[in-house]
Length: 514
Ligand code: HEM
Image (cartoon, rainbow, N blue to C red):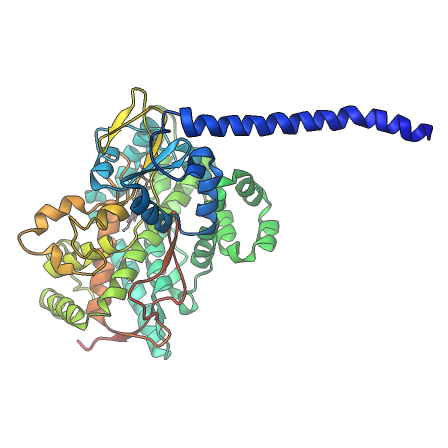
């Protein structure tokens, strides 16, 4: 009896302390929600009440569905601006796009999103304009129009290897999975150009390269990483063997990380090893040059690794998806394929190796370029909002006064589906890029974003699009395989980039006769 009395006396303060903590915590959450709903500087903006009260609303929709699709519905209900977090607004209009992403603005990227990729010290991940500018200036030695022109022969070599792999696949009596095949060639281009090493992904059986598969599988985790940084830290912090065991589908990515880190350590510790690389324009040559960065010395091993990862993720799937999406729509319209092949034959009469047209010739081909522009427009590109922080003093976005510190975003998807600019936006019409009105339209083609933080790989991306499209349609006759999707559009989920749902676009690639 005595014993019981003593323990209950001892327990009482602990329980009541806990109860007070819970009660105060609950009160804080309620008061904060009331403040956010009624007194916050954004309280007049429309949107779901729960989104205004708590960030968990956005986390729920991003982690369980396709947020861009949800935003399309929200804009139908609430109009051109929607409050999607207590401190965040999403805009729909084309004017808003140009108010946010332009060369005058020096607005920082939102660290809450950009630091969840584990690439904080890279051109993509630096949130401040100044840091990013310095890195971008250095990397322009690889990505400027002149640098890309000088690297043309390297890109061509990889594209020719790709065509040889498609031919082998066909000779083996198998159609090609183009979701993976196009990713293999874009990955081979980036890894060879930027790191002087290439895993030759196009040579993997059925184009199922373990690294690309792992990148594909890992994208589904991206929204979870945005909102629950602890999960990312736990997974990324694991020793490689343990990480492979707990998530076997990402083993290819972990193997790549190990290899890349080894390569980087070798070059950082002994810069003379750079001489062993096949060309002198790798990111290692450029970022390890002591004179490269104005304000700091050469890039650290951490920064080199993060830059490599940013370039692979930024330039691989993005470019490949455009060619895949374009092919999906082209194969629904045999008349368009015929027109493209006729033009290609005119500019590239015979298929003798070594006589492939130069990039400067591909740039001149009207229909090829119209097809690429329409593929860039109709595909989701990077559909997710690209969040920026309104600087001190506030700003006006689409006619709305927005206070400093607010996160604002929109994306190319909304511009490219603006019916007042692109009538019938869901219809694939390359012809909209030809004729009188086409010049006017150019400024609304924004898949690479705009302004100070627009895509760094713009010139390389365009070179790859022209070369891969041209070689694919000049060297092959394409026919949809039975297992290919027949729907009107390819379904995708927004995970920052698009995550395409199965079945994958699968096509017979029969070598063209002459
Ligand atoms: C059709 C292909 C491509 C598309 C649609 C595309 C799209 C984009 C977009 C929309 C952004 C802005 C992201 C943001 O604001 O957070 C971006 C940034 C970037 N892209 Fe691309 N990209 C493509 C190809 C490439 C290629 C080939 C590379 C290089 C290998 C590349 C490297 C980058 C980098 C490093 C950034 C970050 C720039 C910065 O934040 O300052 N991209 N890209």
